[in-house]
Length: 131
Image (cartoon, rainbow, N blue to C red; front, side):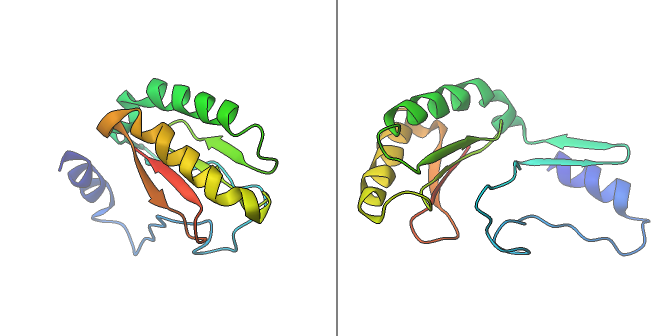
């Protein structure tokens, strides 16, 4: 994998380094307003972007727009488009709306064929869209 080789060649001679792959919910409590994040690695003289995710950016943006419209009636449902990934949060929605929100996310994602998949979030039932 080319990206792995790039990272290894640029960090191989470095003193011990840390690579944090998941912050929200793993290294810090899940907040009320999630930060933006995605499949990108940036650092001094290093920029790696997962190519399939990058090529799907526009389609993901359209999917996020569709979901935001479809979820408008569910107060507290939030679609977070991060450019290369997206999350559909329902932690602020009424408990009675959560199953419908989740089903809406799965249905909208399925309309895009195999381009995207839904991964369950850290909190039970919080769907995350991943390219």
